[in-house]
Amino acid sequence: MNERNTESVRLWRVHKTVHQMVHDRGYVVSQSELDLSLQDFLTKFGQNGMITETDPTNQLYVFFAEELSLGVKSIRDFVDKMSESNVFRGIIIHRQKMTPPANKVIEQLSHKFTLEKFEESELVVNITEHILVPKHQLMSDEEKKELLEKYHLKESQLPRILISDPVARYYGLKRGQVVKITRASETAGRYVTYRMAY
Image (cartoon, rainbow, N blue to C red; front, side, top):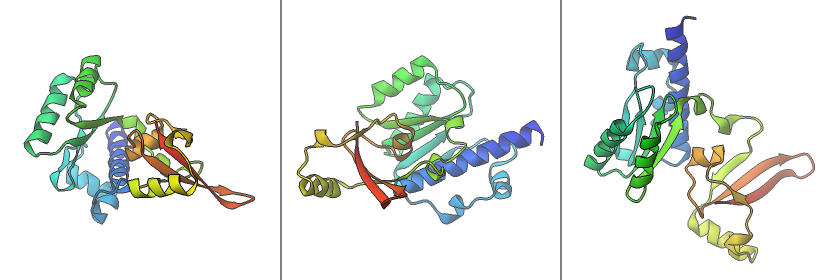
């Protein structure tokens, strides 16, 4: 397999994982996008694999950066597109590390926009499909309230999951949200725990 084909396969896997991630967060993603084959991907996006995915109907923009090192100008261009469409949540997929000024711009914009960033290498494989990763399910505010009342708990008594945890990042968890984690157990069959994003 030549270098160009290897790059195309890698980008197809990233594209597929991103669509699964957005679907798992509750956004509407067409089945055709979830089932996109490598051949269809190459036909749709060309052999160079350069992708700009923007779908304002889901109120989320996914931006695939073409630059090797993502800088401030690209971030500002992306945010301008979001602003024009009245979308305040976005995911940036970049090839390599972002420049420090670009990271600073994202921090400065955090009061108005929710911008998440992923390096392509983090999305080549969907971590939630790995055999050692238990099923995580985001709980609604109502379910969280019922859980706390049922077990007579305060939020501070729940075990924590860091928002920097790879699975927490995959689901886009925010501080205070609770996930239900279901693990397989040899003795109990299924073992359920709850963790609050911190």
